[in-house]
Image (cartoon, rainbow, N blue to C red; front, side, top):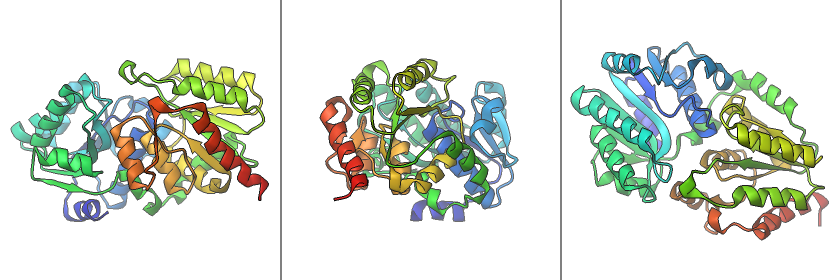
Length: 353
């Protein structure tokens, strides 16, 4: 990870504002924030302001490193913080892809204004810009690219796309690859709390659900429901990668599954994201993962947990290619036979030859 290491070693990041889609409760976004806050604190950065959607919920997912928090919704405070800062840091994520929306466009416009009109150093670290994005997404990526002093992308597709906009682009891996290098001893209590919620007494399948937007419609959730009905003897954990208050409908659905199937445990994302990585590491010999989320897949890989190579967007397909999973399954082509084949091989290992 030469580009990221060189960046942290050769840039003074005091007087910075850290901005992303932090505070919405999405596992991937909160993971990236915790990595950056942990890393910057470890490098001695003291003056850092974090823009966070719900500061009152910050400690649900994060350790307090003494950094100032400001609510993302308070545009006056956010603009004041940007004016006083030297640097604007955007910490990772496939912002310009299939999940593109108006909020990302406005966010990109803000980056353009900060870099071009206010003269701030805008740094995009570990980001993605994919061909799957919309016309609005391409416009937003152009604004963000033109406003940035330096961009580090996480894959070749993003590199090619941003190089059409600016010359200040390098490539490295996603920020989450830094996880195994971080000091995690301070997160022991977070791991212990999560480990007490879930029982892993033998081979256990860890399945995550995801909220898909209307233009991403697929049968993933229905297939998981069918799989559970057909596999009542297998220990299974079904996890939401958002808090229950963010996605109450999905939480009620998985609770209903738990009531129907005695072999199913359920959990929502109400813990520090590092705890899940530590949980996967601790139980990697007994776990296998079925998940569509980019960062859940990467967390499993880093913890040496086998996973079904499932892709819903270019960003996930690019990640799977990086991991050597060339035979991945597009989510709109997923069938029960894929789930049964993957889990059949996993559970069979427990029985031996």
